[in-house]
Image 1 (cartoon, rainbow, N blue to C red):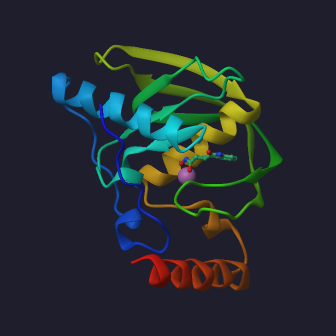
Image 2 (image 1 turned 135 degrees about the vertical axis):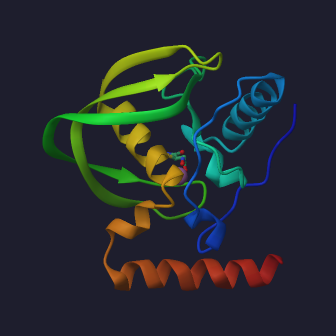
Amino acid sequence: MAILQILEFPDSRLRKIAAPVTVFDARLHDLIDNMLETMYEAQGIGLAATQVNVHKRLLVLDVSEEKNSPQVFINPEFQVIDREPKEYDEGCLSVPGFYEAVSRPKAIKVDSLDRDGAPFQIEAEGILAVCIQHEIDHLDGKLFVDYLSTLKRQRIRQKLEKEHKKTA
Ligand code: GNR
Ligand code: NI
């Protein structure tokens, strides 16, 4: 297993649109395992392949209290089942240190494949619905900062660029 490097805003690679997964082999399983290890190590509740510079439609998450319920979604698609906007303070491993309120539909139905390519469907609300929508945004090159005002987004960008110059 390995810890992967997480890209940080405003890295342009976070803007790529991920392509569907077509091959379910040992290499994919290695990637999934490494993404889960990277997510747990970074103390995140989710991680999209885009964030580790792999532009395939794949995400992992674990929203459990005990951090013992990993979930894998491949080629996920969602439909809104309750579009009542629900606000949640979002953070992102690719935007470290910043948390801002984002509104998203309250409940969704997700169609996905599992790690062996078998289809499954779930309904999600609460933090699980937030996390899945946040991760699928990553696969489409979107970040939670895109929902903020230009001013807030530019401030975050400036602060992170300063950090990156210090540590590069
Ligand atoms: O760890 C994470 N926490 C989080 C909190 C509120 C809303 C979304 C998230 S996802 C984030 C991990 C991450 O960046 N996934 O892409
Ligand atoms: Ni994120």
